[in-house]
Length: 146
View 1 (cartoon, helix red, strand yellow):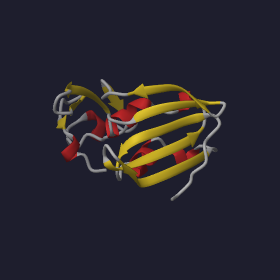
View 2 (view 1 turned 120 degrees about the horizontal axis):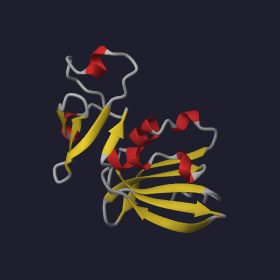
View 3 (view 1 turned 90 degrees about the vertical axis):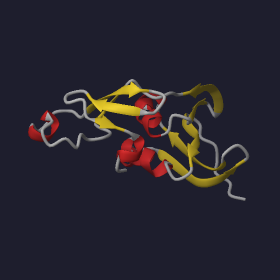
């Protein structure tokens, strides 16, 4: 059995769909933070079969929960202070995401003008459909190239 030590202060992202922890790592830009990060892939789970877990020893406010929720809205966010669990959060799909996905419409302003943020709003929460804030181009999870 693998044993990963507890963290003193930070967050533990639990119940990540197996295989998505590296996406979260990438989009949160955890490689740019000067903190301890533990990535546990394909851990056994009674409820999910397999799951990923991320332990991040940093200030919980420095993590963008909207990015996490966009990639996997079923993640449980555990806030750790002094080595103890102080808060457990369930997240849901964000109403808007910025610079996570890019608009593929060649006529969209984000394709023409440099420096314009790629912004998408949640158009249909039942089917996880997002639309570009500028041109209304539709995106679903299946169309996003991770």
